[in-house]
Image 1 (cartoon, rainbow, N blue to C red):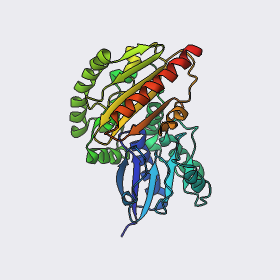
Image 2 (image 1 turned 60 degrees about the vertical axis):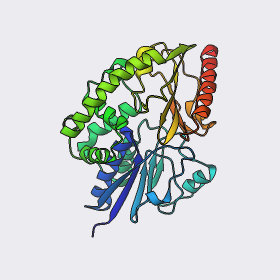
Image 3 (image 1 turned 30 degrees about the vertical axis):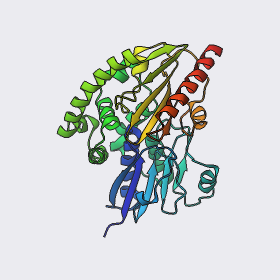
Image 4 (image 1 turned 135 degrees about the horizontal axis):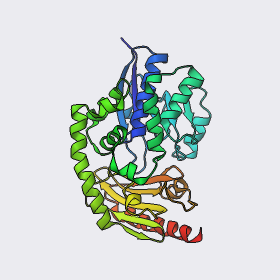
Length: 324
């Protein structure tokens, strides 16, 4: 019987799925040939502890998500600045000498981080995944030439990103991870199930642009919006900058069955200096992320608390813009 691996990945995130695909390729190509691999998505929630029941009986890896001090965790890769829930978790990581747990916040994407470690540390490279690594780095690092590119969704990778971020079909996401390991992105996005899903989501995407045009406010360099009544948590996060190109920051509130979420971002195309580390700002409210994009999760019934925190964060960012 082949050794089993469970991959726990950042759910509804292009970089999360691509990380799962690249690690799977590495694991089967260098560690255990022909290993049986299964997937489990992880979503940031209030408290954010990873339930022990999510780990499998064999080897387990977490990619593109916070650290766990569980004895069941075998491998770990993350590139977020806010990678640890506590000082104890960070100390546990620092004291781990397995050679299988890695963190580097300098990487724009966890996918490229995994590919780099696989090559430099383990001597493994899958050149068929170069395009996937390339696009994961562009998407997670928001390295688009302009907001139009990010919102108009003409590239196959951008269409696949839309499906990944919006669908709640876990089995479809797992099939996408498997497809990423063997198919070009243009072929994968044209798979009947993926294409049909995208077409439905694209209609909603166009509607969400108009809704954002109506709902969002822009004051002192900061876009604010609240779509908690519309179940649009997976909407394209670049729409605010598409509509308000002079924005420096954006703060939004959304609601899903598992969380009330504050999304905090900065405009990648703003000529104005971004002086606030958004990860550190969100950490003050129990969230985290990267210096330029971060988030906070509250329990679904704590929407009022999320709204109040969002208003405080927006005020902090507006003050920073005025001061810059």
